[in-house]
Image 1 (cartoon, rainbow, N blue to C red):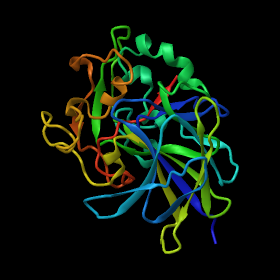
Image 2 (cartoon, rainbow, N blue to C red):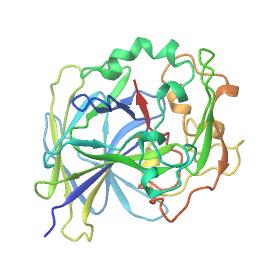
Image 3 (spheres, rainbow, N blue to C red):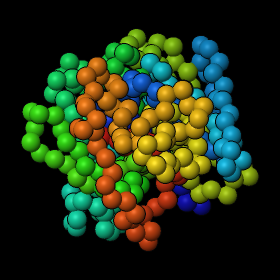
Length: 317
């Protein structure tokens, strides 16, 4: 019987730091307005707390489209660690592509981290805002006011598994003349092989390392799945669900009428990044999708969280 694998899907405002330094690579989730960090699975999984100073039973939310249940915990001011996977070198897809640098045109190029842009290319006024927080983005003990959660990458294969179906155009701040125009990853996936049949996740306070809670995630005995599928995302709660939430008119709110803080579709993916720091760009500098529908369904894997709206992951430094 082949060993069980697990796929951890990263989405939303997630920053991949130190990808060229194997011992320092991590995914950092900034403290962004209107977003929270969630560890979530669907109803094919067992997800339970097995230890901790305070009980935090995973909460249930139902997708109104499919009727399926999803289970999640919120990660706020905690570092997250994972065990239960077989030790292996960290294998991150390269930043290069063989074909078009604007849109993926093969399955091999789709996996490239090229579609995960650098913060300097997509975040206007990056130099004026992020330098004050440089140490927090790279630190094992960042300030919770800047970072909500942090997850080290220590092994397995890391690659892009879904890109947004559109070409985005970015115009960085006045300190840079370059303009970025390309498709952007919406999901990056880490694939690991398990020692047994489950993964163990441990949380601890970001600053003190205290207050550990331990959770286990595995497949139900009735599941037909061949791998565990986990979503680790910095998104509005509704974006954990697979139901479509795409807007059809740029002048309309992207989310439902009950959303207390709807975003503007001009910048559906990256508005959350701009809310992290106090000097957001003017509307004219915000990225816009100017061409959609280019993706080839023959090689683009269906998104784990179908129906867009999630901000795309980025790289730093």
